Length: 131
Image 1: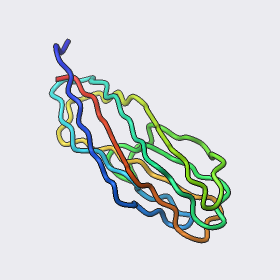
Image 2 (image 1 turned 90 degrees about the horizontal axis):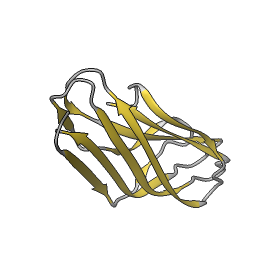
Image 3 (image 1 turned 180 degrees about the vertical axis):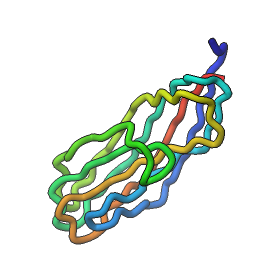
């Protein structure tokens, strides 16, 4: 069992815009490596989300690697309406079977019925990993 843990933080103050209705990456973690097979990674994404025009709901996901990667967290459709400003925080754990080198996680958002982009500001990610 590893004796220590490290935390890898990433901050993005600028707005990361969504597409109108398509799933879009709005935050990315720092790359993380661990030489321990079967490691569990504590993952946290947060920020201030503003919904785009006509939006009725937003679904957030944390995915491994990229927008096409395995979804390890799905918020389901959250009622966030047009121009609403919401503080969002999504914690989860990812249990990866093997060793990893340069692993990334992304936070995505998909607006329902949006006719204009939404966006995440003051984006923050934190990955805690055993070393």
